[in-house]
Every structure is written in structure tokens, then in C-alpha cells.
Length: 182
Image 1 (cartoon, rainbow, N blue to C red):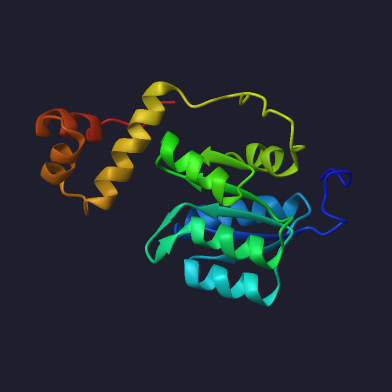
Image 2 (image 1 turned 180 degrees about the vertical axis):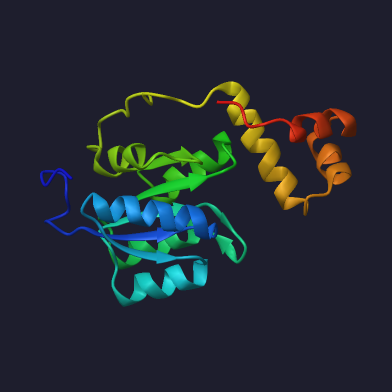
């Protein structure tokens, strides 16, 4: 980690994500890169952790079962205005990206995010524009990830997922039967 960009040498980081597997992998990767990670799975836990000891950095999921990561951004900035926050989401939409930046996030990344991209976003200077990712997901992979997320949110109900995605049920079944594209 670049000490020149670290907030006064403070490496505390709050990681909020309701996907336990993703949260554990990301926490481990961030710890290996020198961050002191506090890992939580809900907005309530994140708010409590931020109230107890406001971190220098935060990586927050946008949509959680008990609320929005945006409320945690606002809480963090009340406790520690210089906290650098990166928002993660499985729903890449311009409106939510704008809301995240207005709330005080320094960047907004789509899931699954690579730890190197997260660190680059956390350490970027305020006027720096992020470089494009070295290996972005293919359009087919982004589509597949979105379909999987909606399918999961619909309780693995194919008919409901097809209705919400505005596609034929048989087409969706064929997509779900295939392996994930690279």
C-alpha cells in the first residue's frame, strides 16, 4: 500500500457486504495488502462499527437486506469526514453511481470487484481519473452475472426471473443451464 496516499498512516478499513463468501475473500485480500479490516454483514453492524471507531477507509455494498450502504457513507462522513469510501454493487446503474458519489463515495465499482481495483479506487488522488481495468469482464459475463443476481433475488424461481428480465422462460432456462462465460 502506498503510504503517500494513506490517511496519516491509518490503515483501518470497514468492509460491509451481505455475501459472506465474498466478504471473507475480500477481507483476507485487503489484510494481505496491509489494511486492518473490520468486516460486517449488515447496515446496523456497519453503523455500530463506525460509531465505535471510524475507519480511514471503507468498502461498502450498496444494497443490503437491512438497508442501503449509502446511509453508512453518510454516517461515516459525520464521524470522520476524510474517510475514503468505495461503493460496490451488483446493480451497475448510473443513478445509483451518482447517488453514491453525492453521498461522499470516492468511487463506485461493479461486483465482482477485483481487490486491486478496489485499492486503486481507495488510494486515487481526488483529481485522478481511474484507469480502465486491465481485464474487464466481457459483456457476456456482465449479462450472466446480472441474470444470476436476479435469479437469486427471485428465490431461484425461473418463471418470476424471466418475467422480471422480460425474457422467455425457456431462453432463461437455457442460459441458466450453461456455464458462466469468461
